[in-house]
Image (cartoon, rainbow, N blue to C red; front, side, top):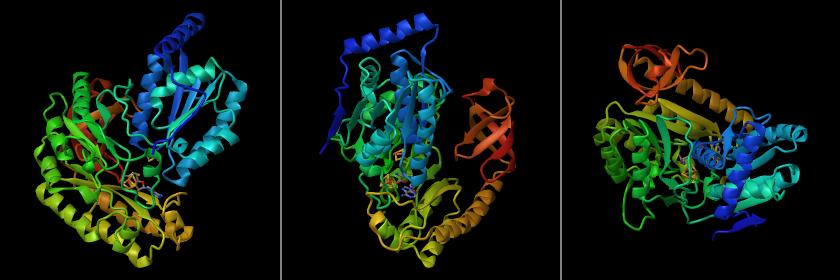
Length: 471
Ligand code: SAH
Ligand code: SF4
Ligand code: F3S
């Protein structure tokens, strides 16, 4: 059941939005500058994309982005609680902002994102950080103008959260961070309830966008000059399961592959339990779909996979990897791994190491298991002591990094198309981009190449990036 928590009605009629725009325009005329906002984004690409929607909403009512969080007129925390350290970072930074707000009482502070979808955490923010003016959730981004109006004009603390909703909000304005690559939601929420994970509790049940909505969005992006899109969902492979008219993720890939102007299609994340043969063939046959599959394994032991509620076995996973490599010989496979899940024995851990050796991953995100309140795993016995977790984690990285470096070394002397994404942080004469296989490459070049796909010959490799030269 969906539950809405609103303190002071935030929803704005369109004349109020016009009034707010006018107020901001007046501010611009009086002060010679627009009101500024700064967003601190924590967490995954879902949140990154939500921040692009927040930027879009704010731009549409006359705000301008600033890099400087110390004197912005509005500071927004888009939060994550996937692991404890994500949560601690937000609380630490909120503490810092408290001082800023003391010096600049007109500054508005807003907290949104996944942490705000949890009542206990919301209550903690309301009590401990009483200077926070606005709280909204992952389902109420579109209400932001109303919340700002309420906080700024009516001087009310403004809170608007919908805990779960069947609704999908289309056509929100978006101000994307990059011109040449874009994130596109295809599903929201998650139905899988992996026992360690908070996402189903804070993002609600899985909902798929209508294929036409996605296709139209990608077409519009292509017309704007976008070359690469990443289709986003917690489990993109189950796309379409709640649509009235059956439409699978594989079918969606074939449709998007037809769109002129788009040159690369990526997707995140694939759940192994739903990776079908049809999908493998779609990746193989769609020329624009990158030969890169991010396939989180989480653990190698069947006992742990079962306790995690992942719904596949080590053997099934390895079989999928075998099929992928057979059908798409140059496929890059990356993964997520959790070390130290409750009850993990040394033997269980060695099964994870065995998977890593077997698959020969191109890269992997590795995490120490973090106990999350409200999840099933938090109640399990045999929580693993920190020292054991860390010791296993270090051993895993030793094995993993050797493999990743070895995989990168195989690229030396070869030439790959690279989408130029940005100039290097340290020098304007260096560019950064990615290969189809998601490898990060640094090379000499100047900014007029931004957004182009150039051929780069690899000359040197490290664990986390490669170096090369344009040929
Ligand atoms: N939907 C994606 C993952 C989203 S969360 C999927 O199923 O693959 C990203 C990653 O964070 C997960 O793959 C998992 O490896 C990690 N993660 C999630 N909850 C965690 C926890 N409680 N402790 C440690 N890592 C966790
Ligand atoms: Fe979390 Fe599992 Fe859903 Fe991924 S599939 S978001 S890990 S519950
Ligand atoms: Fe993503 Fe963190 Fe939310 S990983 S979905 S931002 S809890």
